[in-house]
Length: 334
Image 1 (spheres, rainbow, N blue to C red):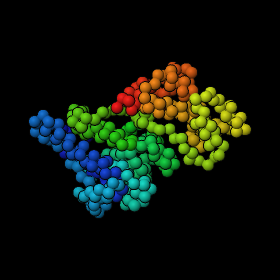
Image 2: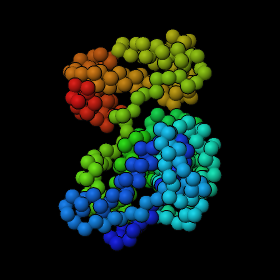
Image 3: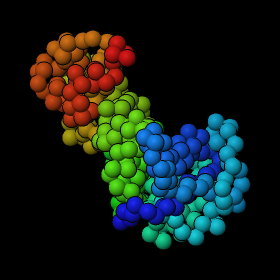
């Protein structure tokens, strides 16, 4: 594992049409100013730690999803090796971007085979999966893309609740600002903990947040064609604050509880009882975000009589207690 105080590590950021502009420039800034910003603040000698370049196919300009035009430093074919290859977020349609940038895939694979570290942010993981680099490996992406990712790449061990995953020399970060967690991890990997801490302080970054469960909205849409399961889903969503038994749901649609569990699992990737809990927790999150509410009142409003049971389920789903979630996300606390 690289850990040198003197070497200038080579970072290549992959540029492509449809890239999210902020992800591209954010990565460029964060690594470029490692060993620079902290030293400037303290009046010390500047000592950059990374040589950062943006590479595109043919070295052509890059049209970001926000229509910003970025100039590449070099052509990806000219990059024989690097310490780290970064694949930023796809900002446009994922399928369109992958199709239009298929020429990038051999270069991603080629550099991965040189033992360089390869890291993706958010939907950038689709490039890694498309290149076949994530088969049998742990990976993560934005929770909003999890269902598509699983459907497109079933051989990948998608850990959608994680902010950052590592499998050998392959790293993935979840959505949005999770990139910063990944970047700090990589900076520590190359430059040590002290330098990583300096970057976190100069950029005012909250590191090691752990996972994205507390940011996730339960998927209450119906991406399947089973009308019976849809009917049960809609009943749960309309009556989550009332006592609901799986046996009663099965009777309602005239099938056995075992059959209902099987069909639900097939369509929604969870059992009916888990879906009931997910809907209730999601509603509890919304109520906590809207304003001040007592835990007892909150539990009652989402169908739980046992406060301790509700609190336990809420923390399991979000990694936060209801009070912690309210403090973090309530509009009244902003």
